[in-house]
Image 1 (spheres, rainbow, N blue to C red):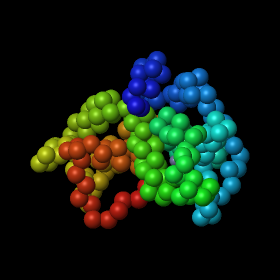
Image 2: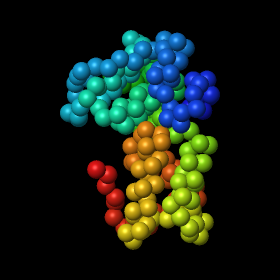
Image 3: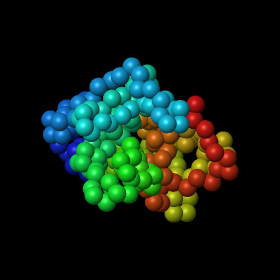
Image 4: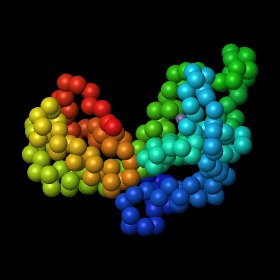
Length: 207
Ligand SMILES: [Zn+2]
């Protein structure tokens, strides 16, 4: 789905996905506008809301305090909701829902909400880091850093400083190319089988 949108909207040679062009496409074809908002308030758990898609108002609101990477991923994620779940969210109420949920705020149960969130994240990752070009750039960069394949894997990380440093450089370069966070790069690298083996004992934190 994300690749179809890219084919239609990517009119330049730039590797970074232009979210302006994608947003234009979404407004034109789905009638959904994207606005920045100063404050979207808190969610039920008291966490600040960064973005919101309101299907009935046909609007995506993005909190304007986000850094560039987070903003891009958040917009792509919300566009994922529009394209993957829009029609369902606009009209989610069936007779069964009504009898079970008794007009609760959320017609979707928690598992369903989790699934839609995961789907929107996968959509966003593929919109911002299109598979083919991402793999080409990942392999090119790994080769330029003199990565030697280890077993079945092209990229190997463990606690050794040289391997850690190489991985930092690799994720930094890819983060620069695709204009997403290094964390998003790492998740995406790991979503492809056989590309990366992470033997680090401790969770590596981004700062
Ligand atoms: Zn979401």
